[in-house]
Amino acid sequence: MRRENSLHLHEEIMLLVLRDREGTLVSGTMYSYAIGGAVLAELLMEKRIDVEAVKKKKYARVLSPAPIGDPLIDECLAQLAAAKKRAQLQTWVAKFAQAKNLKHRVAAQLARRGTLRIDEDKVLGIFTRKIYPEVDPRPERELIERLRKAIFSDIGEVDPRTVVLLSLAKSADLLKLVFDKKQLKGRKARIEQVVNGEMTGKATQEAIQAMQAAVLVACIMPAIIASTTAAH
Image (spheres, rainbow, N blue to C red):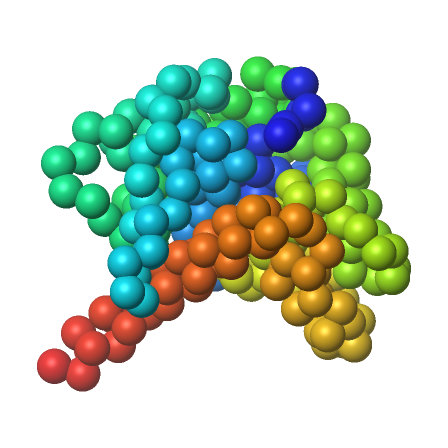
């Protein structure tokens, strides 16, 4: 369960991928799929959905359509509840990742919390765009410290939300944005141990593994489609 007034997972992902001063996205990231996975993970942890395994496929099954209180998560839950056909987890991750104005909606939410500021600048002196510089660094520092402890210490237990955040960041290749690549390489075994859910309960472990697999597939599919299209 999420602590009252603490950030949602998709908000934490946004803080990781935004440049603090510039308020722009780090280029080349698969942040939208990490956000899609974060929404899926929130729905699993809040017991709004569970995983229905059919042979080797894993589908999302709605347990309760009751809103959580976050606009983006509740919109995605409503999509799930209204779906006429069931779909696999990675399909939902991809759909959530394609939500309209995804970056701006999540960033604006963080601005309402007082973490970011909504501003504008010009690209090439011509095009106006919205940017979201950080004004309160404490939430990002706190989440990075949680990740640091999970990766670089040998504590025996990691809280479920940090495990999910680490798993999302790893799946979308975001850890390199905040930690040294060589140091991460030296802690590869530890990261695998944590993201595989070995330090959480069975229910959380199953949710983490299902979400991680869904994010990986969702991230990989656009690259596969692009390479296939280029070959023709």
